[in-house]
Image (tube, rainbow, N blue to C red; front, side, top):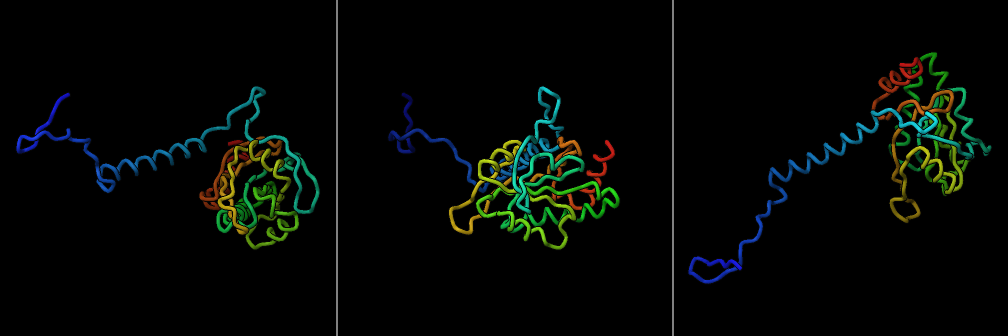
Length: 219
């Protein structure tokens, strides 16, 4: 074993690896770069066309049976006949959910006559608290879209439809007034109930309306 001597000739331990302080410019650069890379990966995923199944249909979406805000049991047929902006959230959500619904409402207004061809479909990821009555009361807010189908169901039913749309959700704590972490993407479905393009409330009403109109016109 190689031995090291100190200044006075006494043996000493070999020097350990040099560690960079967490606040060094190099470390901060690497941390910033990792955040940028993760954001870029997410953006690239949202920008890609939907993957296709063996039948050629988009792999996002699928059959479901849930309960709407009037207490009626409905299936994926609720997506047929109109363009649908499908969004997963929950009534007690303090920010993203109401912001998304208001942005969709503004985008619908900016679509003009094309707005009549669009409906919002809100699917709860908090079935324990979001009853049909709760959903119906929550939808009665200024700025929300004119046509909204709000859906809830059993935990198993919600888990199944979330898997079909690749939606993540999870309780953040066990308190009575818990919040739910969840995906914030909007899924634009065509009048045949097939996935068209991913959207986000962060685009703002005008860009959202432009992208929806482009999809409607086959762009």
